[in-house]
Length: 410
Image (cartoon, rainbow, N blue to C red; front, side):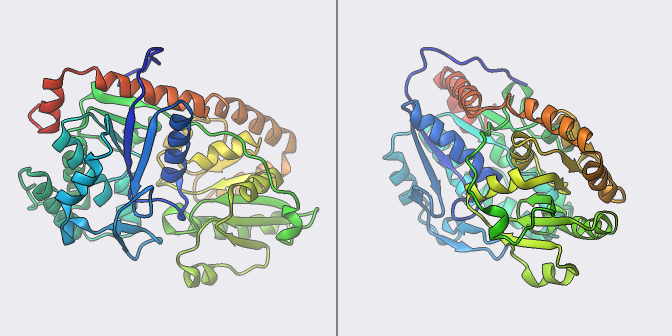
């Protein structure tokens, strides 16, 4: 895995970022990308986001999952027109942040222009495919489509597993990259990426504490005596909500003043409504950053039951507010930016972990303070400097090496 050193004499660069997820949707990919793009612009670099509804907007259609829109160019055509339009931005680097059609377009553009391709592996594709029960044949169809568009040999689809199909897709998208960034070492604990270790870089996203909106408790009917247990993220299956809500019912039996606040987009309201059997749960939907910051200030415990996150920026946000976390993901607990400064639980002991932090206030404060120290090491400034170091490294590669990587001959 590579290390970075910020080059003091780095020339200004033009970067095209490709992502399949963007505003008004909110998630960790968008937060990371917007943090990076804003910091790059502040330093004088040109950073342009290519996405459905991005700065350069790709024609797209809703895909029916979690309010996600996908660019439809692989099916409807228009590749050459899109590439010609994007080439007009004269990018020095293509940075791909997601594996959908927008990401594929970025890989194609870098290949066509013979310029460095940087990829960030934000999403645990294997975990998401399992959570949404995506059929293996659909994943193999996608892999064959990608191979066709990239002019690469069609992967062997005789295997029927989701994992093999996703591995084939990763090989197609990541195999030609000059550098692949992972946000935490947890990614490499879960899967094997088809990337030369010399091209792998570990760069956690930097997070900064935001100003909080006043009057948050009153707005959401939360009394001063209520003890807030907070969850921030998509209120959906892949985030472990089915574990959290029954666990909170156990918490209520021990701590009747507890109140669970779920902040995030709700894509299956009937599914969620069936699970909630108490008025001690508040569902806010998606909130602006200043409202989320106020929720962190009000919280005593941050409950994070997800087993699909590669980084979980919300853990850093909670830590910056001094809120201790309970999580289920042992790999993220060991390898994440909090560095074990959290409570690790199982599905069976998740409620006990929350109750323990509510009751042991001195321990909870100390744990939150330690987590804050670790989270403060990962600033937006350190994040952008690390990325710029990687950009400089790949730009210094000989042109012949860049061509070989772009065409998949190395």
